[in-house]
Amino acid sequence: MVEPERIRPLNRLPIRENAAYVLYWAQMNRRAEWNHALAHATELANSRGLPLLIYEGLDCSYRDASDRLHSFVLENVPGMEAGVRALGAGYLFHARPDPSAPNDLLYRLASKAACVVSDDYPTFIAAEHNRRVPDKIGVAYRVVDSSCIVPMAVMEKREWAAYTIRPKIHRELPKYMRAFDHPQVRQAWDDALLPPGTAELRTHVSAGTVRNIVDTCRINHFVNPSIAYTGGRQMAAKHLQVFLERKLSRYATESGQPSKHATSGLSPYLHFGQISSLEVALAAKAHAEEHKLIANEFLEELIVRRELAFNFARYTENPESLAEVPDWCQRTMRKHATDPRAYLYSFEQFEQGLTHDPLWNACQKELLLRGVIHGYYRMYWGKKIIEWSRTYEDALGTMVRLHDVYALDGRDPNTYTGILWCFGLHDRPWTERPVYGQLRCMTFDGMKRKTDVNGYIEGVAFMERTGKDPYRI
Ligand SMILES: Cc1cc2nc3c(=O)[nH]c(=O)nc-3n(C[C@H](O)[C@H](O)[C@H](O)COP(=O)(O)OP(=O)(O)OC[C@H]3O[C@@H](n4cnc5c(N)ncnc54)[C@H](O)[C@@H]3O)c2cc1C
Image (cartoon, rainbow, N blue to C red; front, side, top):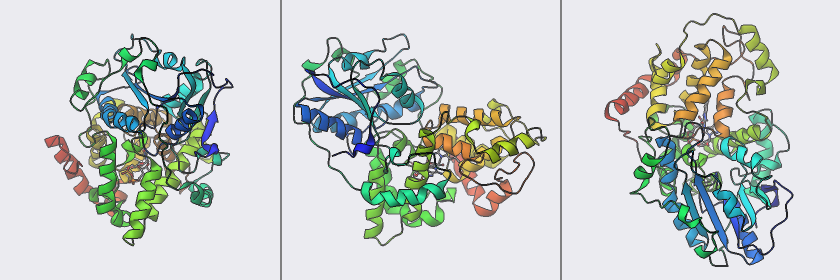
């Protein structure tokens, strides 16, 4: 049974009597396994003796939709469909090819549903949909939190920093960090239940058709698929397996060494819900126990840091705004707003990695090619954008935009928390310096002292030259 604290009704409409099915709208948790929202929808269907339909859409009209993001989502579809069908549910995937094409499929499917269940998610499109759709959908609409191990609702307010949320999370973990069985749907699905004219809108996706579907969508075709990541649950599972077998044992000592490739590379899969943090955490814990390893550092990032980000996004009006950083950050930025900047770059110079700093340029090129930046240098990347922008607002805009366009794990609670961390969120005041004020400062010399900067730069140069990621899984 899905814990009630994961579930939130978003309108007051009743469950429809004499409905044809329960509808689960997979917006963020695009997986048939370890999915509390899907499990709740299944429980609801079984309790009413109804079949279950899963609807998954891919829109072309959201900001910066691109070949990179579309491919990653589409590559997951065949596995999702197989998983859903194995549970006994129906599945309809629709890629809307053109902004002029009708955009009412969800509403048409909901017209025959007892209830619409979807994902509780605090940023970007899902957050926007969950604000707008419930009043218009005409039937009970509830969302379920399958993003966090400790449900977001358990923390009742915005937390100040990792040290305030950590003890609360650790107190709750024994209750929530446990495997759960996906119930089977008891009432068989039949496509004849679909409202008239909707079955025809199904987009059939196979490994061989992804490219073609991407090409026919009206999106930004200038951002190529990542050279490092293929989407899909199977690929997520492979990344997890490689991480456990080859990297977890050195995570504590080498995750801060980008050239050692000791992190999991799971953030794109976690962002698109192709794998769940709960299953990753349990797998890491079990592997560590079996091999007498310590997984604490990894679990700190995956659970405490990640769920701090979800807590921030949930209890924040606008997670993309500098108004959300603490007062001491605002004060210090006001004081240093007019400090002279040693270098100033335009958005295009940042975008193309054309600064004077070879490490920064390599980070940006990693983003262009792979769709992520290594976690340790990602902080450096952000801090330098602050240092080399005319205003703090310009710096924020540059970071958000570069994530929107290029990051496979962008628009995530981690995105905004990571970016605002550069402006002091969840951090503390440091010694005062020009431009940074009391915000933590990072320097090229510091990176050189602590990490193998040349090894990383050479690795990125190789990828740029060959168009290949030698560490691709
Ligand atoms: C400026 C800036 C921007 C960032 N943008 C993003 C983003 O767009 N998307 C994103 O997922 N993360 C972002 N982060 C956080 C972090 O850099 C990435 O989560 C991490 O590098 C992903 O690589 P990985 O999956 O190999 O991580 P691993 O080290 O293997 O960690 C496993 C998982 O733990 C979580 N995690 C790790 N580090 C952090 C962290 N510092 N805060 C919160 N969760 C964490 C992630 O879900 C990650 O996938 C950003 C950080 C900064 C400083």
